[in-house]
Length: 277
Image (tube, rainbow, N blue to C red; front, side, top):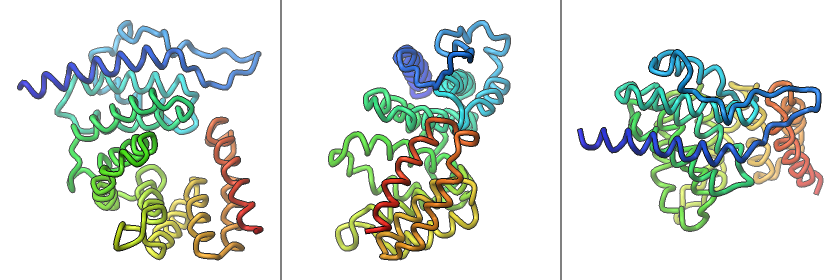
């Protein structure tokens, strides 16, 4: 009972605290003629569904997409936080909070402090859902949030790698999550990690997973971007270039929003230079 109470308090204080900080970080792309909702200052306590976790989670799922404006992702995270705090036994709410936390954190690369705080909420929520063989989706969002924290901490976060690796292996049981997310993230981990005997790095396994991701889930640009990186490492520059061309065409703002379209296309342009060296 004490652990449950502590989790509720931590969840509510962490959620409220990060929301106040995120209000100062409006990354939405706004055209002069466009009107944007006031996601940051909207009082969710006034919602008639504020004590209905089912309804809150339903709306949070609808709002938390890759292409959503940053403020909308923050709002979805607030709703997910409320839903999770109302029903701690429902794993789906905790997984939803972990997902929304990841989407917010992943859009905050210019602010490492806020990025890390959001990712830590995502890790906490995934642990609440259960980072084990019975929760492959929770394992995936645990891994990607931990990966963001690892990115900010650099060498000081390397001790997290084994747990991330194990979580991603379990996540393969539900590879459909996030457009083949478990495949592409584990594939990149095999690509970026040191090779045996000092690490788990394995180019062949990376190529296998990333090729599978690009073929089975061809709608996500990162599946092709990551596969191209592995192909470059393998010396197959022509095939890498072809995958980058596909990724560039997929990375449209109409599908993924302005933020990711610009981010991915910039990354693609840099990788193309390596295919012509």
